[in-house]
Image 1 (cartoon, one colour):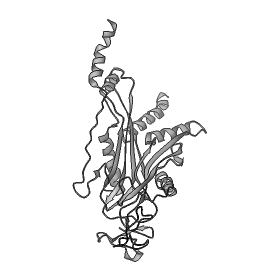
Image 2 (cartoon, chains in turn yellow, orange):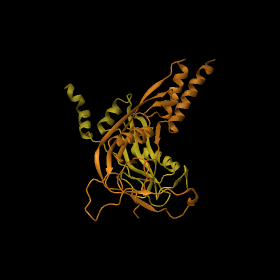
Image 3 (cartoon, chains in turn yellow, red):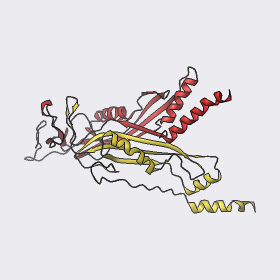
Image 4 (tube, chains in turn red, brown):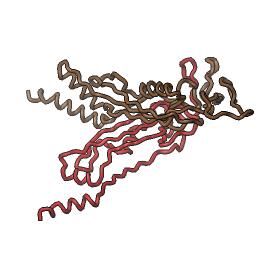
Length: 143
Length: 198
């Protein structure tokens, strides 16, 4: 009879499955001044402003709570001001990676609430400014 | 007396909390610009995306730069995006005979966020002489290519001809590739090197 004690837990874990899904919508360039994200290359002409990586580390507590915000959407929001201050119009060739947390892990995290689950999200991409590149003249950038 | 002992600890906790709330868990790493299109024709063409000309692939390259972060204040070594992409990667591509590296992917494996830097500084000052260090790694991969059709380039303007803001874009010209991959038929030969094609 002892193994039956864990039956509800096993049932929950099997229902939860091993698949973790995260969905995030990339903002599109709707008007000049709005920041865009794309996983593809941009059509020329464009100017490369630099490359950037944002890494956000945190932990899941009680299995579901993410106080720091290590999901893709939060990381993207954190990156947007950086893109604006760099003078770029958006981020091209975006690559994203986030620690997957399955429903089973969330359930286990709720049971063993005293053990936080380490999470991390990373976004990389190339900062681009649309339009022809600014001319370099003797080390001075023409505005 | 009790409040005097607990005050520094409370201050530390408050600082840590402020760091966490104020984005202390973020680590943002930046590198310099790659190649723009039209290209300024300086050095190897570097891009994270597709190239603006036809090419043949010479091979793939992966570089793992190693460095050390010292006391959360400074870094030594090659674990920086700028040096690894624009320096080592471009050099290796040139050695392979490439004129460009495309589809570049990069990852700073363990960047330090503000909270970690603050912790390293605190530990260094607290430990009386021993400096806290952290190994740092940057991995960069890319496809080394040789262009077989002209790459659009942008002619640099003379100093006197710097256009004001809002002016029309400068003319774009094209240069022939460094080494054409396929032999051209008589009568359809590409222009000799150095010729500007409008």
